[in-house]
Image (tube, rainbow, N blue to C red):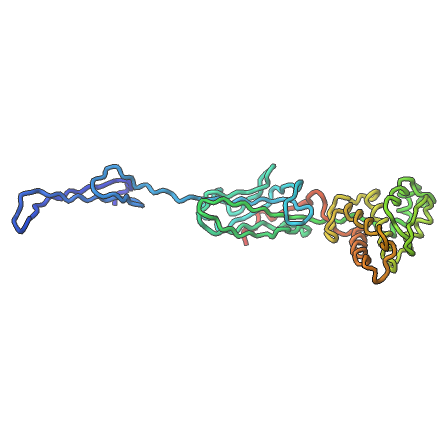
Amino acid sequence: MPDDANRIRHVDLQSKIAVGGIAGGNEGHLRTTIFDGYPSCAKQGDDDTCSASPTPPPTGSITACKYYDKNANGFQDAGEPPLFAWPFCIDPLDGGTPALVTQLTGSPPDGCATWSNLTTPGDYVVTEANANETNWFHSTGGTSMIMLASGGTETRTFGNYCTSPSGGLTLGFWSNKNGNKIITGNTSGNGTTLLPAVVTLLNSCQLVNANGTIHTFNSNYSQFRSWLLGGTATNMAYMLSVQLAALKLDVAYAGVDGNAFDLCSHMTVNGLIGAACDSMTGPGNQLTLAGNPSRPGQEMLKNCIDAINNNGAVVPVTPCPFSFPNPPAPCP
């Protein structure tokens, strides 16, 4: 066939047609039309206009977007920012544009990567890369299988969060000379009087004693120290109180971010403080001995607070640094 796929070739064949076995004198014409190319026209007979140019099948697109899931719940909530320069890869590429198996999520404001001109219908797998840093985690899973319909457009969002040390300080710190310097203002660490702001902070929540009575703080540092170090879990509300006092001091004076997210309690640090305070209000919640129905909940809150006070991991409000192999690893 000639190279011109749209050429139409007509061939006329002349013959004498016999009618009833008698040679006739009428000239007949057999006209054939051959169309080079795919698909061929469906017309019959004389046709000088039919074009054999094929109609291309519709293509589709897939977009992958990355966000910082600062409460680790697997959904992009209001205020959760996109993450830029995070690698994604697609399998198969199958004619996609750009012709890159791996792309980085784009610059502000979207944090997305898109492959267009994909063959449809078709099945595709989009996978995000794992950061070099081991304190980064998936909240939505790192792979999405996509059935792309004819001419379809699909978008998938991927959440990640990181953890970092809380910066919390223990009961021991707030009862030693280093803590004393902060809460009394005495540079030698042997102050005897709590700062007024510290007294106000401690009294802003209903903290209790071993016998379940409400503890009212005054400026006496020695009394504060004895109360802090005397905490036991016989009365869980008392143990929760001393840990909570340390956490309130951590947020106010030690740089613990109250807006950071605590994975233990599934609350922000400020939310955890509020929940702990609330758990010791109401009848029977100040003396939670064994068998008290409020005790398990208070123990859970105490354990979460204790972890933060021991510099345990929290999810910071802003993303941690991240990096990837260069060049990024291919799709698995």
